Length: 299
Image (cartoon, rainbow, N blue to C red):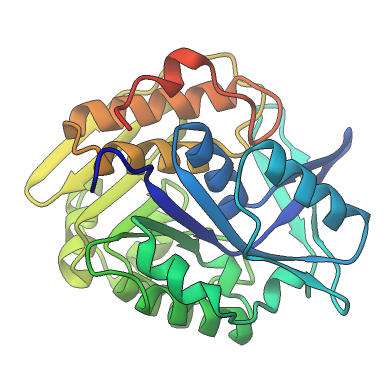
């Protein structure tokens, strides 16, 4: 990648307002990734959908505030902006109740998609954004239009009843990076008959689906990254947890910046854990990152 050029990243999938007891907060895994990736120095476009409603208006405003490009944010007259009812446990762990048919479920191909795909250094997508065939086909078409040199990150999002092998298996085939957590690995272990300790299961996934990188996060216990024959295991960063919403997406954003900069894998993992821990210490999924974190990884 040309060092004089900003990294080009695209996030695809759900745009949601997380409705907490205290009120709505802007979110959705691709949105959270996009906001953090932009804060860390990338030029980021979001491909998603909103309704012609007040939450849709606010979504545009939030993305502009986070300097995320909205050329791919589609406006629907027929479907509402996504909203999720969120409850947070005393330990800060969120649970979610999703709407069933939102604007982001109905993405339509447009001319600029080819350019975005061809220029992208990183594409980040998940499983929830594919819960309906229309958006699943859109995501597949977009990923297949990307360069063979791009990082194609599949960030699994276990949100029942929207999590199926007919979504997961093709997505793993499209990706060259997998990001998952300690709740998701046991599900994949059953789905693909993975055996042995965690490290062995991650290596089995990498071999089976020809993945260049597998990132495994485990909350306060830190993270483990597998790349080829190298395995890095990093302890978590101790913080006072406010809530964990968006922490995994922040980890992914920091990780791909490090991968693009070809930073040592140990340093990438440690840095991504620091960024995720900071997000856990703040209210909301996309708090402003402190300058010392923003400047840590080369652009």
